[in-house]
Length: 82
Image (cartoon, rainbow, N blue to C red; front, side, top):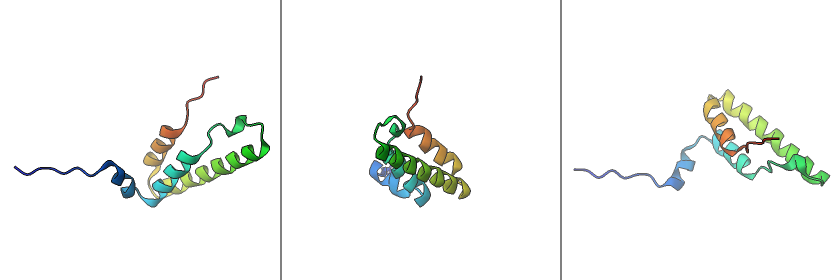
């Protein structure tokens, strides 16, 4: 009987298309609560990050990775309740 070797978890990230890899990195680094900052510089930086993420989402969707891109976004986006 042959043994089945599983790929180490850290290598799964390497199999993502570049568009999804870049999107995931941006989502990981994003300050999701920038809009609550009293520091205008932090707010502007958060806005720039958000705009970049929006562009990456559009790019991924245009390349046919829309479902995966949305799943990544949903994984990192905090659920806010007011």
